[in-house]
Image 1 (cartoon, helix red, strand yellow):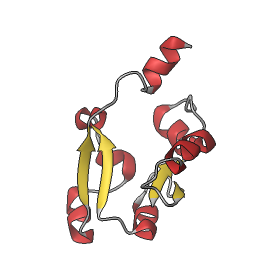
Image 2 (image 1 turned 135 degrees about the vertical axis):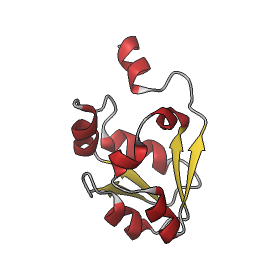
Image 3 (image 1 turned 90 degrees about the horizontal axis):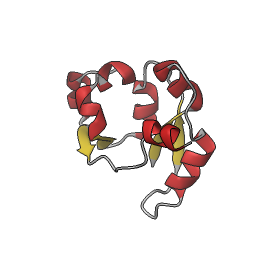
Image 4 (image 1 turned 45 degrees about the vertical axis):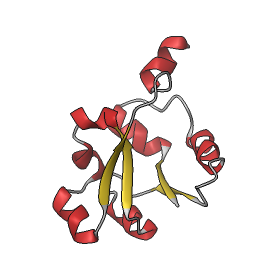
Length: 106
């Protein structure tokens, strides 16, 4: 199961709507054979309720967040992740698919 930020969440955080809509991002994730279900992150600035509903052992994000305050965006701390038994894992960023790069091509 994967929790995916809604368009409203992305707009609130970035100050502009996403280039790729929630429905399109969801369709891409649903096409991944390891993903059995996609749920919206509806917690607003506090993602803990959605994370708890998914009950993950891992939260995976791309390495682009290594320089940003991912914890503040999602509304949790490392201590909270540790208390929930959740590992925060950074995945390599893929070239050519960031919002900035997509906007530049458009």
